[in-house]
Amino acid sequence: MAVPRSATDWMVPVFGLLGAIGLVVCIWLIFTWVPNDAVLFFNQRIFYFHVGHAFNLFIAVGVCGVSSLLFLWRRTPRWDDLALAAAEVAVAYGAVVLVTGSVWAKAAWDHWWVWENRLMMSLLLWLVLVAYVLVRRYAGASADRLAAGLAVFGTVGLPFIYTMVNKGDQHPQAGTNGNVATLTGPMQIVFWLSVATFFCWFLALIASRVASTRGERELRELREQGLDAGLLT
Amino acid sequence: MRSRVWIVVAALAMFSARAHAETPGPDARAACVAAMNVDKAFATDVVMNATKQADPAVLRRTCDVALGLDAKYAADLAEHAADLESANRRLAADAKQHETASDAIAKNERHVIIAYAAMWLVAVGFLLFLRQRQLGLRREIALLRRDLEASLKENA
Image 1 (cartoon, helix red, strand yellow):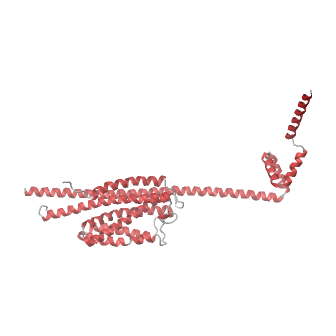
Image 2: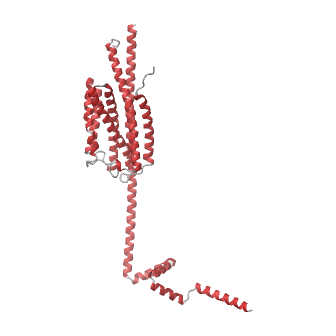
Image 3: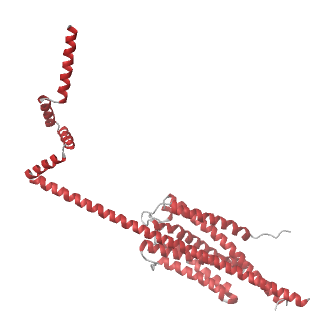
C-alpha cells in the first residue's frame, strides 16, 4: 500500500521551480524591458522587488494571524504549524522590504530612514513577527499560545499599514502618478509578475517549513511516547 | 540660294537670342527693379539669393559700412550677439544638467545593485536557517533511533 503523499511534498518542487523561473524572467524584464521612471529614473527598478515582497509580507502575516486565531479556537496543531511557518517566512520577507526600502529611499530622497507613519508601522509589524519567532523558541511549554496571541495582535495592524499610503503620509508612491493601478503597461505587467513570483516562493517556503515543523512536532511526540512507554531514558 | 539665305538668318537669330539671355539688357534690369519695388517678398528673395552667392569679404565690408551709417543697426547687431552668447551659455548649462542627471542615474545603479544584493543576502540567510533546522531535525531523528536501538538491545 502506497503511503499517501502530503501536499507539501509536491508544493515545494512545483512552486520552487515556478518561483525560480519567475525570478529569472523578472530580473531580465526589469533590466531590459521596463522603461526608466520619469521622476525616479533607474532606482525605480527597486520597486518591483520591494513592493512585490511587501504584498507577500501582507499575505504571510494574514496567513499567520488567521492560522493563529484558528489554533487558539480549535487547538489543532496543524494550524499552529502553518502559523509558525508563515511567521518565519514573513520575517524574511519583512527584512527584504525594510532593507530594499531603505536603500531605495537613500537613492531617491537621500535618506536611509524617515520616521513617518507607514515606515514606523512596518517596522513595528516586523518586530512583532521577530518577537513571535523568539517566543516560539524560548518561551517554553505555552509558547504556541503566547505566540498565537502575538500574531493576532500583529495582524490587526495590517489594514492600517496598507491604507496609510493614501492618507497623506510621506511614504513614496508606487509610480509617478501614484498607486500601482496608474503604472504604465510594462511596469504594471512586471510588477504583477514579480508579485506572482514571490507568491510562488512564499508557497514553496511555507510548504517546506510546514513539513519541517510537522516533522519536529511528530518527533517530539514520538520521544514523549517512547519515554512514557519506558523505551527511552 | 534663297533657302541658304534663310538658314543663315535663322542661325543669326538664334545666336542673338542666346546672347541676349546670358547678359540681361537694361530693359530686363529695369523690369526686375520695378518688380522688386512692387513685390517686397520677391525683393527679399532676390537679396537673400544674392547674399548667399556673395563673397564673405564683400559682405563684411558692406556690413561695416552699414554699421558706420546706421547706429541703431549697430546696436541691434550687438544685442543679437549678446542674445547668441546667452543662448550658448544656456546650452552649456543644459549640458551640465544632463551630465549631473547622468551621474545621478549612475549613482542610482549603485543603489539598485545594493538593494538587489541585500535581497539575495536575506534569501541566502533564510535558506541557511532552513538548512540548519533540517540538520537539527536529522540529528533529533538519529538520536531517537540510537536511543530506541539501545533500549531494544537492553530489553533483548
